[in-house]
Length: 115
Image 1 (cartoon, rainbow, N blue to C red):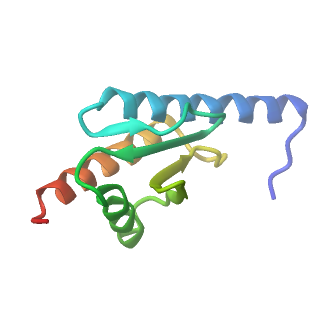
Image 2 (image 1 turned 90 degrees about the horizontal axis):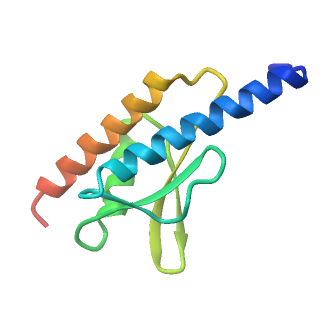
């Protein structure tokens, strides 16, 4: 387990919050594909995929099965959501941008599939 001093912990928190903000901004930048489910909090972005009913769940299942990234999911009320957390110490901006591209490519593939 990594040990942080106070300044190291503060830097880690700032970094992970910043990466979470970046991911949420990327999600918002593609309003044709995504919608934030709730406002981002700390390093957590929760979103849905626009499309026919069940699209968000299909996208999540593909992401999970392909193992290129590891989001989590939840059901809030009747809504299936995808959750992305940017809290790992080794994550860099490039990792967040790459993860976003993986999500976009997965959504585009799912939307092309026959219903």
